[in-house]
Length: 235
Image (cartoon, rainbow, N blue to C red; front, top):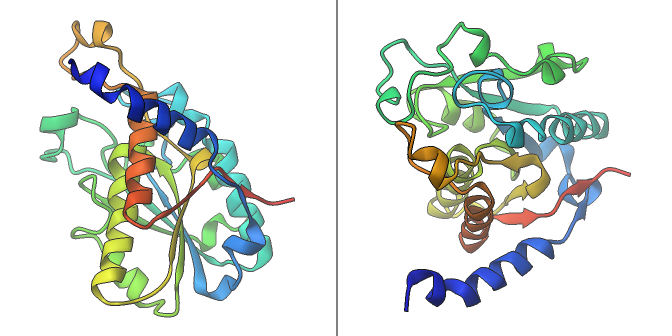
């Protein structure tokens, strides 16, 4: 049997699992605003709107993310961290993904919908030079300065790279330090790009099935104890 044939049962299960993800209310997600944080990863122009790694699929998360941020802020959550790619010009990551989001460029800036939030000036931005959120950039220090945090809501892109690295890092670090808490991923606030096999043949890039990898990595996050939900409702 081919891999596709052997995987059919699981793929059917996976599709049904994603379709039936439960929603939670903002009151459930943020029961104690002072102990909760939103961490946004790579919600920048270079992945949503412009440049070689931008994607119209990913651009659609702009409104749900900013709506969630605004609603959480109004509820009293004041710790919102923007983790954004801001590469040096000779970044080693370019070997894998090509040149993108050089620090100081428009691509590396937060999207205008985030910049237009009335509390944007009170948010912290941390730049990274790899797909990992916490290497050589002060991420850990930001979290440790807020030692009472026990709930992290992760949003951004892309599901199978930076979001996955962020959420599993938070969950596994908490496990290693025997620190209880929640890592929540609202599926409507994360997304990844799509590149078909046919289109990839003419590019120096590997194919990337957006729907499949989005679903698999949401599932893999859930396997690691991360709370994957359909959305966080605010009404």
